[in-house]
Image 1: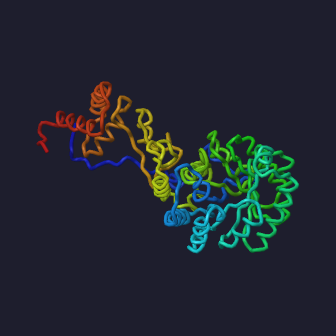
Image 2: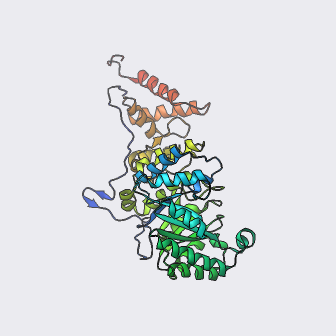
Image 3: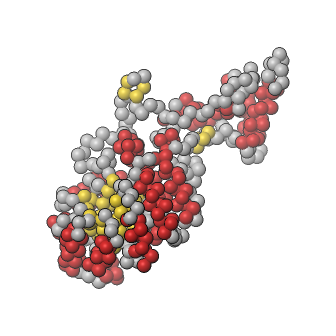
Length: 424
């Protein structure tokens, strides 16, 4: 029977109970790793958020001081451990902005990114940052066409700069640029030298997005045997491997990952903050949820998207328009019964909702019955199946808006309500 006395039914928004059912902890699913490799840092990594450095290199980016402060404050509140700023040597305003953000007293440590020279290092330290990230190209192509220095010269300068920065009482990271097109022997020798000089972190940078996860794992695993300091990683997304490469690096022993909001940066950008955390929450849910205010991700992404005048991509992890949408009848039925059937991520962890499409030829009767419930109507399974066929027939002719389908559902229920039930 059709009735309109039912309370509105909300589509379930919470997946399971975090591994606990009826008071009993359930066994881990196959995709959940157990971190048996003691080198793996997939459950103990830190984020160096570079929206205000790498992100400023995005084609549309222009940040005034107020905007930088707003983004930095939001990122710190979100929980990132570090915020990296544009080099204060880049322009007088860049230096002033760096000094202003250092004075905010944010929870996140403030870093700036400069060339590996004493001149740049002195300017960086003078701004009051918590740490200085120095970088120089090490691949043959960059040595030939960028700074024209030999590996011997690079090593000598790097040691001098690292020692001086450490003497000033701030953190220092030394990174090669274009690491994956650099000679491996030269690279490891250089990292070993700066590690001995007192570097807090060495950086591996896939500057052109050429690396694969297997290459990343191999290099970082080898590097882990060579240095005792932390290992930072920076992956460009030209070939869409940035998130996979970051994950592989953490598995191999890296400790820090550079990210930017929406992945914005030079060319196609770098590892996106949301994309990285989507990957990591599957593997280390307790760690990720305890460190980061995930429900604030959408707010931060909307802020940055507005500033750089882009739309959040429809397929963006977590916050994209279709990230938690379900359309096929088989999918919808399973999702309504148990969300984990077709969702590896829980939308409620991120403060967003799932959406069950019901206005198409692909819809199933379970979705239609659920929608009727949301409208305050009760229908039997047989009625739902009949109603679904009517909706499918209409959807074969033209696209249906939600209002169209709701009208069909209401009309059907009006036609099929019991004779002894008065019109509402």
